[in-house]
Image 1: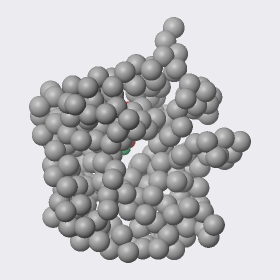
Image 2 (image 1 turned 60 degrees about the vertical axis):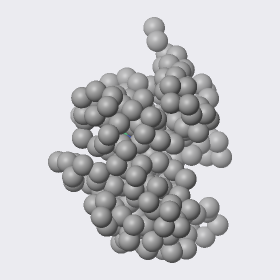
Image 3 (image 1 turned 180 degrees about the vertical axis):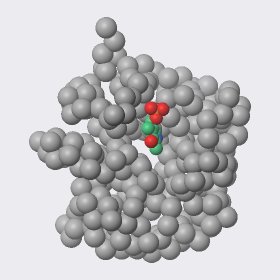
Length: 231
Ligand SMILES: *Cc1c(COP(=O)(O)O)cnc(C)c1O
């Protein structure tokens, strides 16, 4: 039987090979384990195998796990990676360490206002809609720089970079080309003076193309935990 620990190791090896193939240091790519729909026991197994950053899409589900795993709070970084509605910002600001899906100023403003005093700034990425696909989440590339400048001014959050989820593409080159649109925007923002250091790109099916395009954080669910069942 392949354990979660084995699968984590396989993913780490994929990241190392992908980095080697394009001359990057493997330490420049972080692994975020996307644990949506999986029970606390699976996350604990991954943690015991050395995984310390977890991504959740659904706010209630994520907060339930954060609370159930409060004994590990200082050892785990929790990332909210799903679309975020205004009425959920308070609970996210109170529990998570990161949000990858900022696509409008209002959400970032609420997170900043609602971040409890005494907690570290909430780390943010803007989600950019690089291919204007059916997946309508994300800010349009043409509006991303203006949004980034506004978010960067907010007090209790820290803008770290960009996240993108391109429509599934067939083959390495097509996948890489879509990711490179996010990389180009990231480089443009840095050239404009924003101190960004995180490009959240790549999932189980396309992490190699994402690494080749410059990803610094891959978000991997299926390849670690197996297929998801939605009830
Ligand atoms: C579910 C999800 C992932 C992980 O996808 P896999 O294909 O299972 O690796 C990554 N990012 C986001 C935003 C997701 O919703």
